[in-house]
Amino acid sequence: DIQMTQSPSTLSASVGDRVTITCRASQSISSWLAWYQQKPGKAPKLLIYKASTLESGVPSRFSGSGSGTEFTLSISSLQPDDFATYYCQQYNSYPPTFGGGTKVEIK
Amino acid sequence: EVQLLDSGGGLEQPGGSLRLSCAASGFTFSSSAMSWVRQVPGMGLEWVSTISANGGSTYYADSVKGRFTISRDTSKSTLYLQMNSLRAEDTAVYYCARAATYNSGWWDFQHWGQGTLVSVSS
Image (cartoon, rainbow over all chains, first blue to last red; front, top):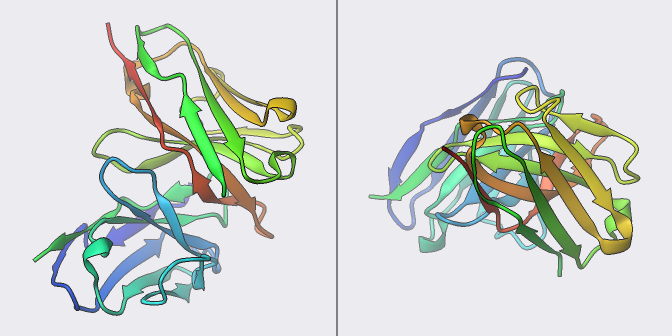
């Protein structure tokens, strides 16, 4: 199985900060990567697919980049609604696998 | 609006069975692959199973293969997960999800149900 490693596991930031989360795959996954946002007690929400394509309705302050084994999710200006846990997921190979998550906390 | 309504969770003893359901609306159910993803409270996400749009292909994580069965009823727009021989390590919130299939052959998860909690304990 492909291992997905996210860093950092926790990130403390302030409203208005630019935030970057990294996801690394144990082998190349081309651009077959999705990012999800999850708030406490809620289901995950798809933010980005194919590494950089924004899901409909997702604010443009979110962006994704990367290919191969290294990917990033960026939030250009952190908003109060963005404090959550973020997960990456690869779908290049079977079985699909998720990263361990990055919790974005209020500084 | 896409809606997925998960149900069927509860407390079950080790070795017991449960059947989860997911009622879908707001999209063409018969055209979408569907999946189950689980999450131990406070932990990360784990893909469990996927069924193709026509129901002809099913896929399972090694951790549940041989114990869980995914199925779908197009007439009811409902997805199911039959869970047998339950173990303590199956304790988790189970989410149904609408899966999008890509040229890679595999899936991301476009829409999610609210989740249903399965607890396995004596």
